[in-house]
Structures are given as structure tokens and as C-alpha cells.
Amino acid sequence: MLLVLAAFGALAAAARGATGESYAALGDSYSSGVGTASYTLDSACKRSVYAYPYLYAQTHPGTSLAFVACSGAKTSDVLGPQIQAVTSTTTLVTMTIGGNDICFASLIYQCTLGECSAALDRTRASLETTLGAALDQVYSTVKSRAAFAAKIIVLGYPRVFSGASCFGTFGISSTERTKANALSDALDQTIAAHAGAGGVTYKSAIGSFTGHAVCSSSPWLNGLNFFNTGESYHPNRSGNSSGYLPLVTAVTG
Picture 1 (cartoon, rainbow, N blue to C red):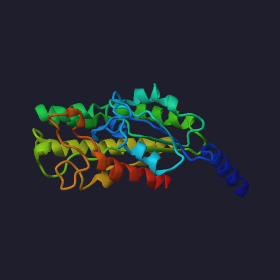
Picture 2: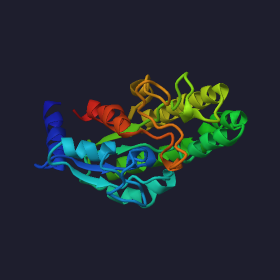
Picture 3: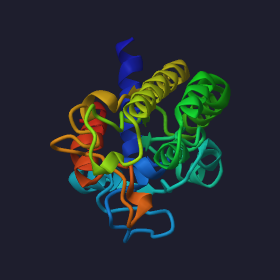
Picture 4: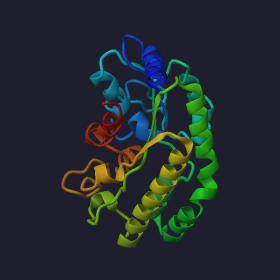
């Protein structure tokens, strides 16, 4: 048994190579860095130097980063163009995915413009039907393409709203904020269940962002931005550096 474990360790070390991790950062706007107000890496996909994947690479010398997360990405995009970034030498993969499949951002904008409670309830009730099989395919495909013993980390979405209201929650009632957070909780549970079944690591963002939602005294999430609506309801720079980055390093060290 010790010889087998030693062989596994040698394989993992060989895959990482002498220069550090080979890191593929997949997923949607929560991974590309939307909300940080700087997209110098890729303006179309809104990839930011303040996004947690880029920060990870900068704080882990020798990391080779394939940063392909893109604003608006769905599970089909991970399985399409993004999956090419995952190869047999990839030793670390991170992603946030699923929010766009259920049109989460559109739901919140609907709340801003009108009533959204019923739509939030319907979306929560249909999460498994909408996402279950797609998540399974994403996880199994990534796992099959990455290096043996690669760390595959699926990150969840935080609760956007606190109990308080402010300009950042303009148009969104207390009931709608509560139901939006309930949808985040249900999405968290759905992703966690499928990640567990797929043999990949899941890290919930709900706990780490607690106390830092929109309208909190130290928000890590942007509220409504009338002047740049795309920045709304996404992690800001602190949300990436203090919210998401520690979730990754808790797994990798």
C-alpha cells in the first residue's frame, strides 16, 4: 500500500512539474472578475487582474494560468470553448458555473424593474431539472481531461443581500431579497450535491461572504449601479481577494 501511495504521489508531482501548478480557471462572471471595474486582460469576457484566479497565480509563484472564465458563460460554454484549457497536465481547476443557466442576473434585474417573487420561486423549484444533468457533465468532463490527482474546485455563489436596504437594493422589496437569498441557498445545495457525486471539491461562498452582502457596512458585493449595470450584484475587488481567493487556498494551501 505504501508503494502504491508513493507512486500516486510521484505521478501528481510529475504532473505539477518543477515550476508549480498548471491552473485552468473556468466559469462565468463570478470567476472572470466582473464587478472589479477593470478588464484589461480581456474586455469581451471581462477578465480582470483583480479576479481571484489571477490573484491566485500572482501569489503562487510558478503557477501557469489558463484564464478562460468569461462573463455570461453557461455550463455549455465550459463544455465548449473553455474545456480546451483543461489538459492532461492541468493540476488545478476552479470554476463558478450555473448562475447563468438559471438566469440569476436577469431575475435580479426583474426584481429591480417590477415584481419577481413568483419567478424566484419557480426557479428555485426547478433547479434540479435545469442544472442537475448539466453540472454532472461538466464535472465528469473536467475530471476526465485533467491530470491524475488534479484539484478540481467548484466554488458557489454568495447570498447577494443582507437584511438592510440602501440605494444598492433600489426597487427590490424585503420579500424579494429574502427569496433571492433562498434561491442562492438552494443553488448552493444543488451544486454541492452534484459536486460531491462527481468526486470534485465544492466550496460554498455563503459563509465567507456573510456580513459582506449588499448594503452591509463592509460590502464585498456591488449593489445596483445605474451607470454600469453590468457591475451590479457581483463581487468587488474585496470579494475576490477576501471572499473567493481564501476558498481556493483553503484547498490548495
